[in-house]
Image (cartoon, rainbow, N blue to C red; front, side):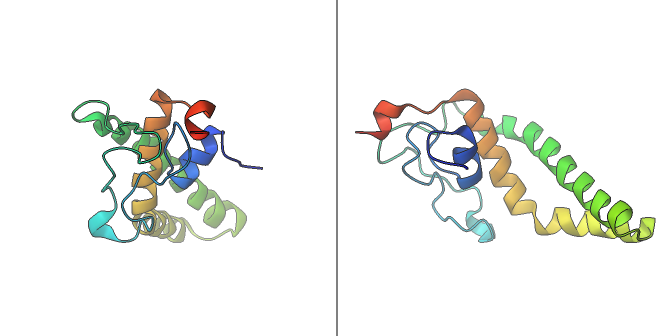
Length: 127
């Protein structure tokens, strides 16, 4: 079960990595494309600054590549191996998966990146 206090909770739900009390994003819906990466400057609960240094989230591009590959492999296995379709259909499913899940991949990679550098602090959550 995923609960507050676990890194996986912060990664999947996009909440503050230190207190898990508030969303890091201005809009929780990743499919509002104009606001997909717009974030609060800091957590209103624990005052944690999300951007530790200028250009901090450029590193999330490396994570994004890995997450995209994981989704592409999952799409390939699902269509080509499980449903036994043609390689062309598998390729189309990979492209559609990556295009449709692009906003989710962007946010997920940012969440993973910030959680590499910050950890949950129970004392901040209880304030």
